Amino acid sequence: MRAKSGTPGTNGAATPPRTLKAETFMLGGLELVVLTFPIVPESPSPSLTRAERHVVELLTQGFGTKEIALERGTSLHTVSNQLATIYRKFGVSTRQELLAKF
Image (cartoon, rainbow, N blue to C red; front, side, top):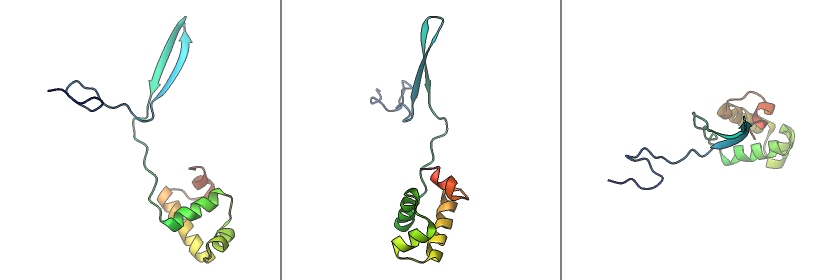
């Protein structure tokens, strides 16, 4: 029985990882190629509500909490709650840590 191309099968072939990186360097007159990829798959981004995505978008544009509330037509309390939820979902505790993820 033959396996379809690019899928795991009896011949041991599998699809290559998505984040495969190749580096080349010279060693003693030989060109060496080193292929690397993460062993642990990258975790997907947390699921955010439409409002939370908008808050993150405004944060990345440099808006402060008060400016986000004015832009969204919501209270400071609402934006603060949304930020707390976003921080929790991303596993961060500061705005700088959150922005470093984007």
